[in-house]
Structures are given as structure tokens and as C-alpha cells.
Length: 228
Image (cartoon, rainbow, N blue to C red; front, side, top):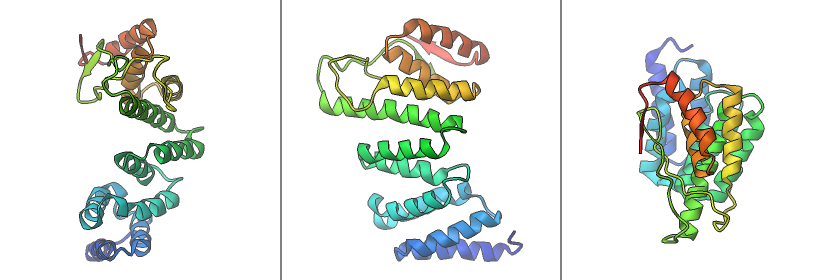
């Protein structure tokens, strides 16, 4: 580990300098040295790093750095760069490449990590919602589910358009449900995925299954409020 705090701080400053020059290869090398050395975690510098890139060059310019870091850290938790890369594609409204990136993430981690499937399921549901609303804006078929809404800081309020054969999308709610169910089977303790799973079940019209899972969820978390 670095015993010299000033040296570590200098490396962070150098990373920022290289980013401003768009020398992402050098910035990536220094970032990996710091993280692999163990003196500072990637979470401590990740958000400031991304903010610097966005502030200097905008959204599109972070792709090169994200690709480099994601490739170098794809087998090392917490996979921050891999997920940031997916979110960046979604921010750019690039659903095709975001979908491809999530599939690659599953191939790398899906057989051993519950949250790989969980994130895949969440993203499919979200991308399907964006796709449906883009194609069928103001359509009578675009009717959000209004049944159970979670009110808790741990749960995202997700109002999904009901499943309907007349709504055509490359993203399928049943695929989302399958990934979320697998995540919960692998690790029943992942609360955020359970909340998503229940809301996807509701959108699919599987109310009895959603109710059963909701009752179990509520027993474990009585602070969760269910609204009509």
C-alpha cells in the first residue's frame, strides 16, 4: 500500500490532468495502479472522476475510459465501471448497445452472481418501458399499473406499462421476470430486486404471485408502506 498520502494525492491529480488532455489510456493506467494497490477504493474517486470527464468533454467522451476500465476490472467486484458503462449508454438513449452490454455482463458474471441477473432484469424492464413509450406515446395501450407502489428509500417506485400483445418491443417483461426470479433464487436477501420483481409480476398481470411475494416481503420489512 502507499504509505505516502501525498503520493496518492499526486496520482489522483495526474489522473485529472490526463483526462483534461483526453489522454484516457494514461488516466486508466494510473487509476488501476491506485485501485490495485489498495490504498484507495474505486468508489472513493469514481464519481469525481466521471464528473470531471463530463464537465470537460461531455457525455460522449467518457466512452473510451469506461471501456478501458470495464475491460480491466470485469472480473473484479464491485464492477463499478461495467455498470457505469451500461448506465452511460442508457443516458445516451442507446438501447441497442445497452442491451448488448447487459448480455455481456451476464456472460461474464451471471453464473455466479445474483446481482448480475438482477441488474439484467431491472434494465430489461426499464428499457422496455422506454421503448414502448417512444413507439406508442399517447396510445390507449400505454396504461401504467396503478396497484402496489412501494414507499421506501430502499425501493424505487417503478410504474410499468401493462403487458399487452399489441405493444411490440424487443424487450420482454417475461425475460425481465425470469432474470429477477433467478437473482432472488440465488440470493433471497437482495431486497431491491424483490421490489422490482413484484412490480414486474404486477405488470404481467400475475397478481396472485405478486401478492404472495409481497406478503413475504412485508413480513421481513414492516417499514415498507403499500399504497393504492
